[in-house]
Image (cartoon, rainbow, N blue to C red; front, side):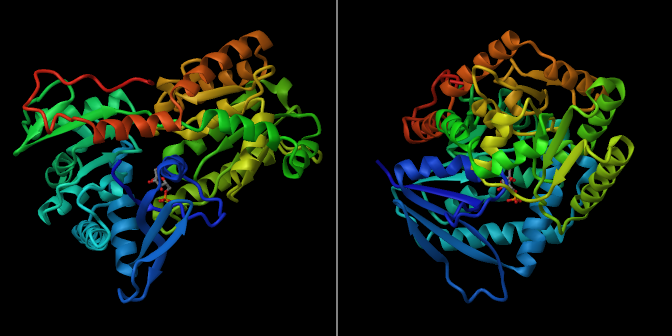
Length: 473
Ligand code: F6P
């Protein structure tokens, strides 16, 4: 078996810290099982480029990280990746702030990744690149003569061509993905949007159902909804409810029903809209006042970016308004916490919560939704209220699916979830859990790597139709 080299902006160095974000959670087990290299940014900003890449060896995996310069951090991370690509890929053209300087920084840092990466690369390594920070990486490697199998997985949504073309320089960025052998997406919708872009904007001809001719190569696309370690997370949750931390939170609830939300502080997560819905719920279904507590855990994220500072302020104001209006000396309706929590703590809280509120305005997958399901007690499960605009909604159709822009609809769903009879809760949970067992994290990684390393369209002579790669497995 070839050596696996994973490349992503964030690297999950095993240092015991609790960081927020689905990418790290999804890559770690795949690499741990097979061993290999995980290459990316250290998360640190250095004064100059004199520091060499640092390597930490742990459990068959070499974690190799490089620092960014201040300008790189500003132009690449805060700039093009998170002020342009992030909003546009989340359908928010209105929030994108494009500058040519940031675009230059994006390409410069990708080049810097390539220069450092090729020091450790072997010709038969299989390379798996993750997420929007590193879209041009394969093209840059190819230009330097690397012929490795290279795959790319987009963890976040891919919008339709009508929105993608609003991305300045999309002609340079999106077709660059065709230098990968395999480009994977979370849902059929994302994969179709990419295919439509290639057909309409680049004029590529199909080389089968899911593959396209591009210059002298063939690029294969596929649908790989990322999963969680379903059974292991369920075990963790069973143990975690007895932890001191979870017991302490439970005691502080004084028999009130817990509603839980866990998200990075990001405008794509729909937190203000969710708070409005909770306010509406307390207004319309006033019998619940004093009987429920909504705990929203929201670690701060990308705080140097104006839109993130704005959302932090807006959310803080809403918390004040809701607690000011409805709170009592003995009851705080909404607990809002910015601290990141360990996976164990979250697993226990999910199991204890009667309702999981996951209502992003747009999300590639959303692993909180899947972990909430995995954590439930099958005998007495809680209910997931899930945005139809999260990738997870495709697989978790037995959740209460809502439109996060419709605060009245979300308020009604919260009320329904809290009052749902046990039999219905069990049926819904069983259906969702079965899907997550079938398409767990191992399955996701094996399917992607199986295709990337197998006899792909790029090697075949141009087959009339390539087997459709899709579904929840
Ligand atoms: O899952 C999407 C993603 O942007 C990952 O690429 C990233 O690691 C995670 O969210 C957290 O974001 P950040 O790395 O910017 O803190």
